[in-house]
Length: 376
Image 1: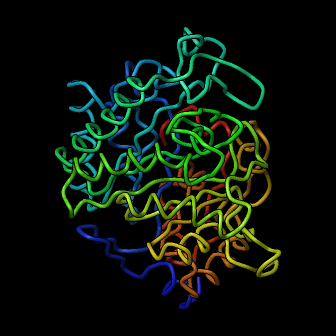
Image 2 (image 1 turned 180 degrees about the vertical axis):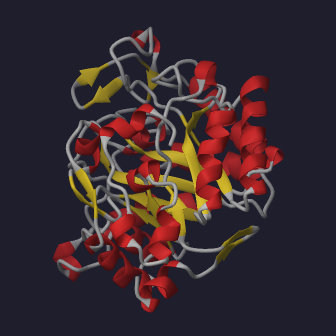
């Protein structure tokens, strides 16, 4: 990479107590190697290898809160219970010993299903209104008691993260899972205070989760929320169709205590509102930063060519590429967003960051679905 690329990607970053050596984040990527929800030494070593190779901030795969049916694969790790938390204590101690910084991503998958036989009782899953996608029912709508218990479970998980020594905590509010379903008008048809025709009304659940999390951790602990327009149920879904709607969506989350917004796109270089600022306009993270003033993380097919994000998990080819990195550097140089998250490339290649810094683009390894069968 050029000197300008290194200057853009390898600047230090600080937010509250979090100090990073560079601007590169390992994106949360579900791996499912935690039997009975407990991460073992293989999981700790998987993250250690990224820390040793200078990933600035590692965000764990999604880890579930203490709610029934909160996961949709048996090997997804828990972030509650003595055994799982002891496993996570080993993970963060291992990462810190390697010089890394890390936060757990905590989530609830609502009524989504990742395999034909899990969760075992889909009719017992919960969601805002009992819909898993527009027009398709699954499980039950949450009661007021369910909502209160869920908010409290998010807060307990965040408090445990800080107690164990993690550097940040991230809430998963994207991709059609529970928090995101409250944003989505086609899935949140509630007529109480948790619903409403305006996105600002439907943001209330996420804002309350953030508020309780913020109160459960110290002022120095950064709280991140991951957000997306697209959903796994509908790639073309849009929560906010204008900057004004985006402000109505995001500002309550920042007011509630979110320190950073992690803005997920399928392709980070695509403009969010091209009708306003053109084909090279700000992406989702750029607009979120412009609107709220808080730091943002961008993500979406960094350094990869070929298959679409989800298509690559179905077996389509994805190759390592310098072209996407050039697009990234130009945006980072303008401070359009603050950090960039890398997913598939870091699943395959633990040394991706060091290779990029050294300009060894030809040595980057391509992602393939077979990589998912082990923790490289």
